Amino acid sequence: MLKLLEKLRGDGATLPLRPNLRQVLIAWLGGVLAIAVIAGLGDVLTLSLLLGSFGASCVLVFGFPDVPFSQPRNVVFGHLLSTLTGLVFLHLCGPHWWAVALAVGSAIALMMLTRTVHPPAGSNPVIVFLALPGWDFLLYPTLSGAVLLVLVALIYNNASREARYPKYW
Image 1 (cartoon, rainbow, N blue to C red):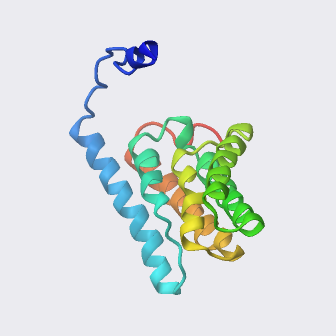
Image 2: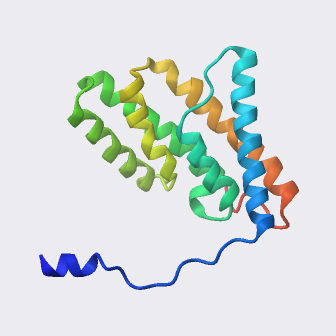
């Protein structure tokens, strides 16, 4: 027990460097534009295209576009696999606390096995269990919203930065 408590002190590493103001503004504007496109198009089409987890996706895609978690395959397939996992567990097991726990753990494992880990998508099974949606939730908002987010990221990140986005498909 003492060894565990000792680990809680951390390694004593220094804080990461603060990003410069330009990086902050670029990330801010990217997040604004992506959510505006997804929510605005949803309003125009009278469809639900927005998931709460897309806000966290914007943090990665626009704040840290070069990391593996931010790549298009991770964003789209991470959201898709996690939502599908949540729907499968919901419909096979019912809305029980243990089923949502198994769904989240299974979504993590599936994303890891398919090399499509996208941390914000880990909340999708929880969202599924809270909303209790039908199978169409996989298409609207999950897949359509994730694809829109990636499309905005492809255009915006390549227009606002010197580096290429994505790093890989």
